[in-house]
Length: 294
Image (cartoon, rainbow, N blue to C red; front, top):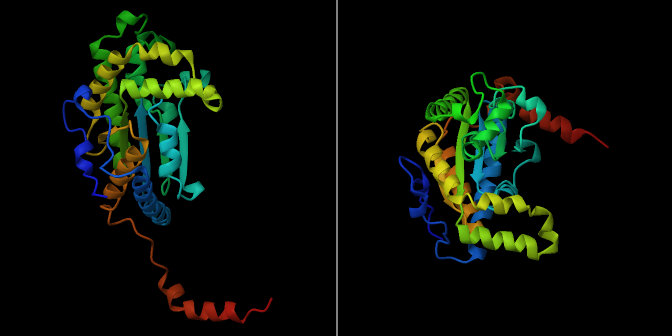
């Protein structure tokens, strides 16, 4: 399989999603794609071990995408070879009563990765400029001063929110968090087929919600919201990548490749050296253990 050109997926300016492909297969079979992913995720798992031993960086992986885009299965497949204690997945739903007592970034801040670990956000802080932009009435539940009605939620409000998110990500990046942001770009037809599959297959019924059909009617509003968010918040320290998501196997390979290529550039992430005294006596320690009788 040819090498994934990761920079092709990076957002560097204005984005028109309708002009970007939602399908990729690299001209190979699903079997080949799965084999490629297996190799990359093994390397990612080994990197996480080193990251943990080094203990100075954490990695935040943000996944956004419309319903059925494949976020759950991507997490399951890409992080399969990780030490289970080395990766924590957070699925952000509607804010709880307690979460609404804080600002909208609070629940995301407390879920950031510890040094040496990966945190995966399945839906992210970007819901606060996506779902809420399509449904501005949701903002009213945040009880923000000076926001009494949807008429108070104007362009200036959204510009401030984009800036708040940029400041949040800049702060955590400067303090040792490596940030990846992936938008799983699904076609409307592929979503239709995946929703039908949830209805047709009894074991998938639990995933279906009539609300998915209502949100589907707002496709173009969501598309415009994503285009604006991608343009306003893709930065060198926290870049966005648009991942063609109609082919799940290829999407997983692309995401894993982007992460592995970027993480390899951190040459300072390496396992710490043993104390000189301990290193000098390793042979003695080995002999002591070998002489033990059970």
